[in-house]
Image (cartoon, rainbow, N blue to C red; front, side, top):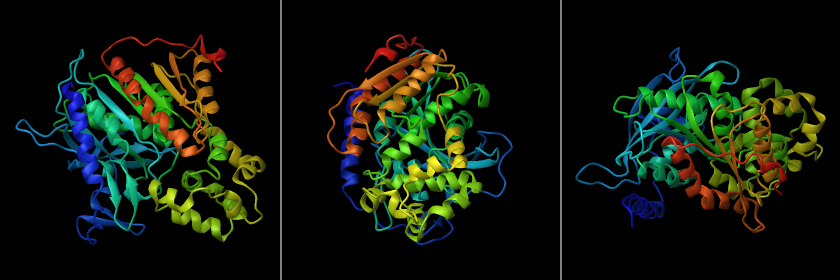
Length: 441
């Protein structure tokens, strides 16, 4: 078994041992802790009143203990982690603080050029500040009476570290930081947070990545939407961050279709996160929400603003938006009836600009949670704009549960996705299958 594979296997074993334990409730609020909407989190995540002037500038950093770490004579495996806070810009053009983590691998980079960097955009974590992916590196499984959260992105992170690739993980805007709600699936907020995480990593003391390091983006589901949006926006927003490749798995490129699909599904709680994020991004939508939502709907949005994905699966599985409205109207019908809401969702559409670097889009043909058709359409749209696209249809049987249909391709395609992006980071050219895409079923 190759050394990276042994390392990954050992890390997974440690994860299983740690994940089987129920973690104690967080300590009482003090100088090193903060209460955010009823949940205790490290005070690190409370941003200062004033932020730096430059996007990507570090606000603060501190060592981050990795739960999945093996001590050796030559240092910890798979590497060391640093918690970071950095400045970015939200969709309204306002400065915002975002947190995340930088991971320096112990393994050597054996490709060409200096050690490369992957910016990993997490999939759906939830909306409570305790759900931040950087916290999931320290606590892969949290079952403490306050929340149920799972750091499921850790596997992809460790795969890159085993290859000698440095990783920076973003928590996005508002997830972790205590100053605002997480603007779930807002393409501008997420893209900016991803690209500025790269800038922050380059300036971190002790990091071996530099401006000469090749950069890749990696994300699935919400993360796939974030990396897809970042690939589009990079030339204009971050021309100093040259991308070697972007992986966008199961991207929610069309939120109108995705919103309709998750209504009544296993992950129906994401409706609340979406609505909360819309209202955080554009307060002018508040009168529309007030006009339609009943007391149960308003209570659900408030409750979901504090929950992680595990909590939502337990409490809101199969919930329907018709039970949240005064007259039983579904959210899809409200969108159809409200031009202002349609315009907002149209602004979130991904696929209207051409990425300047190679992209790999993968989607499960049976995925009916983040619908396969709209994700595939993103690849078609990009091909039509002259982008260099590798499209992968992940063919798995429909197992009858939307969440499983969505989650299974993440696992089955992840190794191929990691290898594809690693090849780009090594300077190998990417092939495009745009010519075959329009005729595929």
